[in-house]
Amino acid sequence: MSVTAASIPPAKHGSYPVRKGCTVHPLVDGHESFGRIAQAVEAARHSVWVTVAFIEREFRFPDGRGSLLDLLDAAARRGLDARVLFWRDPKVEDLVSDSQIFSGSPAEWAALAEREFAGKIRWDALPGFCHHQKSWLIDAYRASETAFVGGINFDRGSLSLRGHPAKPGEVANPSSLYREIHDLYSEIRGPATSDVAHNFVQRWNEASERNRPDGCFPDRETADDLAWPCELSPVVGDTPVQISRTIMPGVYTNTRAAPEAAPYAIEEGEESVREQVLAAIAGARESIYIENQIFLSKALLGGIDEALERGVRVIAVVPTIPMPELAEYRRRDPKMAAGIFDLLSRVGRRERFTLVGLAQRDNAGNFFNVYVHAKIMLVDDAWATIGSTNFVGRSFKKETEMNASFWSAKVVRDLREKLFDEHLAGTAKSLMPPAAFDHFAATARANRERLAKGQDLVGLAHALNPDTYCS
Image (cartoon, rainbow, N blue to C red; front, top):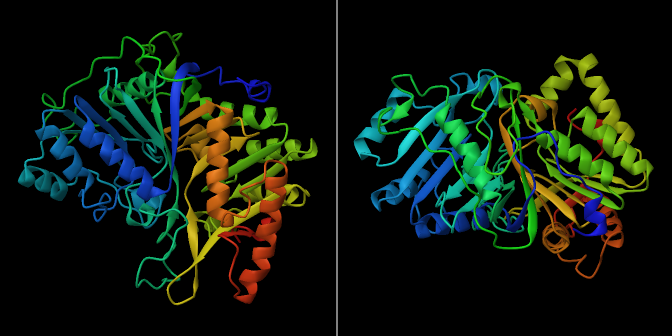
C-alpha cells in the first residue's frame, strides 16, 4: 500500500480480513455492469450464486439475454449449480414504496413450475428490514472464481448507459423518480472472492424460510445446503480487498470462520461496513468523494465535518430528489430528524464541501433527474468502497449489506477519473486532486445557475442546497 493508503486501516471487527493478491474492476452504470455479469454467467463452468433484494418483473439483461430467471435457467440446463437467494417481505410497500420483489407468491411459484425452472431458490426474510445485498459468485471453489459486489437492483431504470443519455424517442416523465439510475458494481478475482462465497453459504444455509413449505424451490431436498469454503481462491493480482458487511444480531448463528480468518461471533451481528467507512473518513488527508442514495448518518456527517476542518475536500453526489420516505421522515419526526439535518447544514456551510445532484436533458429538451442509487466512497485516490450500503443508520446497523473495499492508487484513480469524466463531460481530464475537486465543485455550482435558467449544463453535476435537502 502507498503511504496515503496506509493511513486508512481495514475494519477489525468483522468476519473477513484484508485479502492481498486480488484484482478489482469497477463497473459504472447498469448497462456495463449487467452486460459484464451476463458474460461471466455465460462463460461459467461450475456454478452461479446470486443474492437479490429488489427486482422488477420487466427487467431484462442487455443484448437480448432475457430475465434473471432466463439467465439462471440456461446456466442450470448447461449443468451448472445455479442458485438464487431472494429477499422476502409481504409488507415491502410499507418499507419502500413503488418497489417490486420476487417473494415466492403462489403466482410466482406457479410461473416457476410452468417454465420448469431448473435452478434452485431459497427465500430469506428480515421483518421490518431488508436483506439488501446484491452479489454474484461465479464458479465457486474453482481457480476461476469471480465475484461481483455492488448496489444495482434488477430494474429497468438501472439499465443505464454511461452519461445517461435520453433513450431514442423518449420524453421525460417528471413524476418518474427512478426512470434513469446511476449505480456501480465491482468485479473481483482472487482470495477475497472466497469471503463472498462464505457470505452466500452462511445466508443460504440459514435462510429464514428454508423449512417452510414455500421457502425452497423446487423443494428443500433439491435446494440443498452448501459446503463451506475451505481454502482461499488463488492470488491473481496485487490489490488488497476486504469484504465488509452489516448483519443484524441474531439473524445468522453459524460461526464457521472463512478460510484463514479468525472466528467471528456472527450471532452478535456485524457492522464492519460502518467501521470501515468511518475509519476511511478519519484517515483522509486530501479528498473524499461520495456517491450515495442516502447521505444521512450522524456518525458519518460528524466524521465529514472533522475532515473538512482538517482541510479535506469533500464532494457528495446524491439524488436531486430523494426517495419520498426521507422527506416524509423529516416532516413526520421533525425533532428526531433535526439533529441529522442540522448537521448536514453545518457541513454544507464548509467551504470545501459540495452537495451534488445529477441531471440530463430528454429528447424534447426538458431536464430530468438522474437518480443516484450508488453506494461508494473514494478517499485520496488511494482507497475505495463499492457495495450495497446506504450511508444511513439502518443500513449501517440493521439491513443485510455487503461492500468490497480496496487499496489501490491506480484502480481508485482510474475510477475517480471515469466518474468525473461522466459527470463533468470530460472537463477534468487533465486535473489531479485537489485541482480536480475544485473544478468539480466550481462546475457544479455554475451548473446550478445554468439549470435555474434552463441553459445547457457542462456534464450532469449541479450543486444542491444542503439546508433544504429532503424538504
